[in-house]
Length: 124
Image 1 (tube, rainbow, N blue to C red):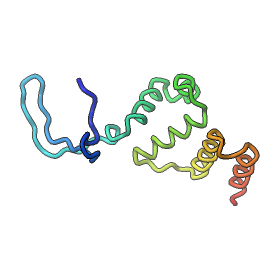
Image 2 (image 1 turned 180 degrees about the vertical axis):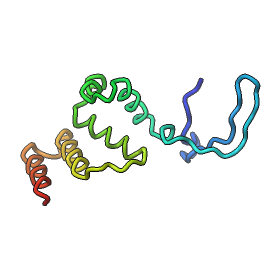
Image 3 (image 1 turned 90 degrees about the vertical axis):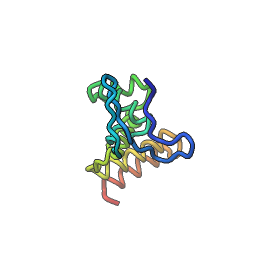
Image 4 (image 1 turned 135 degrees about the horizontal axis):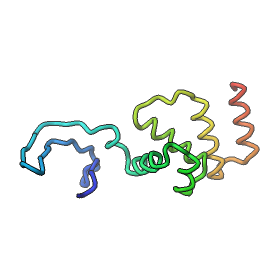
């Protein structure tokens, strides 16, 4: 079976499910059906979710399997939660993840990251 299509291969627009067919009796149900949020995830986040579930939510095991740092794993998890429409409860966690990601990518020095994290703790 082919992988799901979420975007039009021609223009990139969102695709809508309009028909279901029973593989056994060939009954067809035609209409306009919405996709579940999970099916609407980009392939990269869907793959991340599968590995997350496989590792029973253990980010340390997930990071080993995907060969990514813990902050990157945490950041991907935040992205997944947000993509599914759940509000991330703690703004500071999101901000800290951004700072750590910038540090990993070389956009900030260790000293700058520490200063930003300390300022965040103080509420500045």
